[in-house]
Image (cartoon, rainbow, N blue to C red):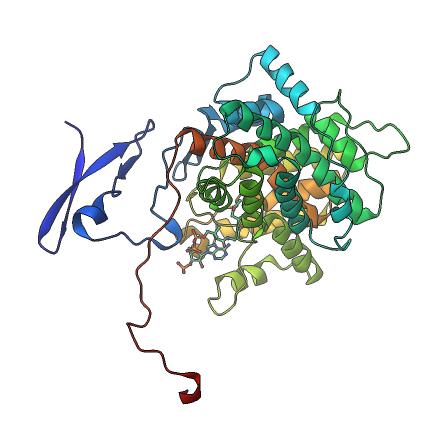
Length: 428
Ligand code: ACO
């Protein structure tokens, strides 16, 4: 007999189905509760609300487990490449060699961007934040690919938008980087690998050939892989909810980019490095900043610490911390903020406030130190997060469409004024 839950409301009892996931996660299905009882459930911040059934990413916050399509993040970060992982999350299985070559070739054919896009790109002030530019440019792709607007597009037609966006995102990111430096853009190379091509457009020069240290290439793969997906977080939920209105892929992802930008989400990677720099400038006293973070009258939070779901080590943070040591050593970079970060982490992990609240370093705590060692400025960090997260957003958007999920539309408990009569302006 299938499991059910019962709830008694105002003297009447209701049986609710219980859904069990493949990892034995349990959920009470309340989708019919209002029809049956007139009650809704209230859960600000969706702290305990499952919005969908998804087969993409499994995350156990208590145990610190993260898997894409069943594969542990540790194995993927160690052994795979970004493009292979992108294929995995989007299409559900690791690609054969042939499928991966075709995927790469299909992407490489679409890396160029319509030259007209440069016209309005040129209008951004050179100091405007890269995330604002990114969301704008990704949204604008819908204007250049109007066929993507068809809400009844076939799977094959949707796939063209998917390939197109995967192909163009690195080119767009590189435009933003080059503009910030006042340098001419470097065009994509159609025979290069995804990550090498990206690095070449970012750090290469139009005037010559560039080669990259394998350490840099590996680090880039690892960082991008670790950011690929993280189930129903703020930006991914945004992509799904925007997409649920049948908005096109570019519009949905553009919305996700804006959600990611906030410092409580992906924007934390920029905020962490700025925090570490501020601590350094203030004499490097980690304890002083821990005290600030604990003070409820001080808005300061320890950026890169805490997570809605992880109540244990974020497995991505563990990998990044180790990679950070390795990469800085191999590149011969000595960044004093790494020591501050380590001192801060150690102090927080031994502090009762952080222990009681199960606050651990998250993915953003060490990533910025690596990005900086690779040569990115801090305003680009969240853009790099977005580049890594793109396959996840795409996979979630695709899954939502394949499942024919209904439009996302939460309810509310109204707490405003009850009915009252309009008073003419002259009487107010
Ligand atoms: N520093 C100090 N205190 C913290 C921190 C922090 N970084 N994070 C949480 N807390 C405290 C809260 O003040 C609260 O304390 P209280 O119970 O005494 O009121 C308690 O821990 C629970 O915090 P909430 O904000 O309720 O937890 P929530 O799940 O809503 O927030 C979040 C999670 C937003 C990530 C939070 O931990 C935070 O602001 N962290 C810093 C920003 C950050 O690093 N964001 C990146 C997250 S990873 C990502 O999005 C990719």
